[in-house]
Length: 111
Length: 112
Image 1 (cartoon, chains in turn purple, yellow):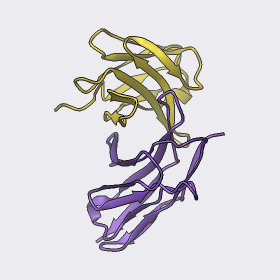
Image 2 (cartoon, chains in turn yellow, orange):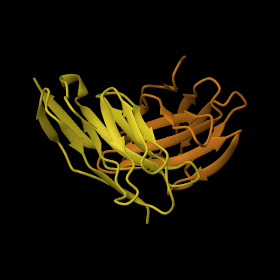
Image 3 (cartoon, helix red, strand yellow):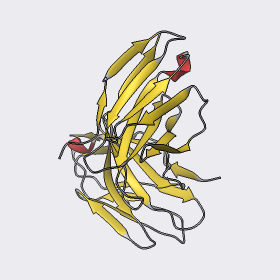
């Protein structure tokens, strides 16, 4: 069935390090893909999105490219900050507006 | 622009009781979605309402229900509460099928 697989966390990095969080999906067709971020005690915030193959979503220094051939949507940032510490969720529409989420990856950035 | 607002922030109930959670979508958004974020289970789709009608529901029992009002706000009702219903319930809204869902900060429901 449809699913999203994310790398397990926590991911612990030093400030200014390079970040990659892997995300792969199984789905038919060409689903829209999303990254959401959840800061402690808060709901989800949309970080970026891509709606078709080879689209690159970007926001706040984060980027992800929709790779149809590898069914992947990996999240990257060139230089993380302490304020980026949060849980990151990869997601896509499974149809009829239901979002399917990955299990989330906790990022801890140390000063 | 005000975001999605949910109330209450926290709700404490006992087993067997009923809980009502409320959500106001972003102005102009007509679709409302409910998700459950339970510890160890991740985020799971519960319900989708659009134009006052239930359009889709996830794999949850019938004691999870809700409605959408003419002003597009929504209620989620959970009857006969069980311990495993303890979770963060997130509401989201969107105005078009091609637009992403925007989430509120959630209601934390604790069952004692």
